[in-house]
Length: 246
Image (cartoon, rainbow, N blue to C red):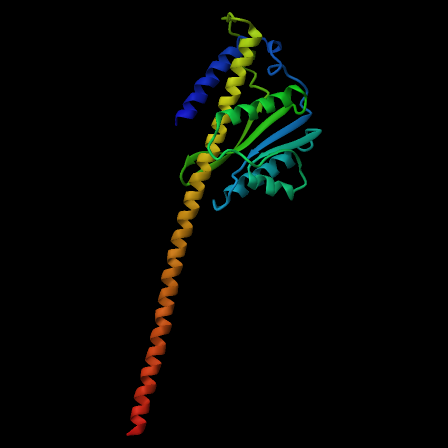
C-alpha cells in the first residue's frame, strides 16, 4: 500500500537525521520525566461493523488499567462518535473529543490535529503520547495497534560519525521535517483506521445478509409446511363430509 511505503521511507529519513542530531536541538527530541500520559483513540462515527468498536475500546481500557499507577495523569483524546459514546460511560478522563471528523480524509484537518497535539506536548499538557487504531491486514482481519508517537525513538544514541549541514538553520529544518513526519504518520494512522472500518463493515454486512437469507429460507419453508398442513386438513374435512352424506 502506497501510504505504508511513504511512511516507511519518511521514518528512515527521520531516523537517519536524528542519529546525527543532538537531542537538545529541538524540544520534541529532548527527554523529560514521564508523568502525564495521553492516549489518542480513533474510532468510527457509525456502527454496523461487528465487534470493531468494542475491540479497540476494551483494549484501551486494559492499557489504561495497566499504566494507571505509572503516571500521575492519564487522559484521552477521542476521535469518532462511537469512542466518545463508549468512554463517556466509563471512569476515565476525557481531555478532548472530536466527534465531527471529515468523512473524506482531509490533509488540512490532519495537519491542524497534529499541530494541536504538538502544541499540547510542548506546553507540558502530557509527556507521552500513544495512538490506538485499527491496522488493516485483510478484509477479514483488522488488528488493534498500540503505538507510541511522542517522544521519538532515541535514534540519536547511535554512534554515526557522519554529520549534516543544515540550511537555513538546524532548528528550522528540524521543525519542518519533524512536523511533516508526524503529519504523515498520523495521516497514515487515519487511513489505516478508515480502511479497516470499511473492511469490517463490509464483512459484518455480508454476514448479516447471509444470515437474513438463511432466515428467509427457513421461514419460507416453515410457512409452506404450515400452509400445506392447512390445505391437507381442509381436504380431509371435505372428503369426510362427502363420505358422511353417502
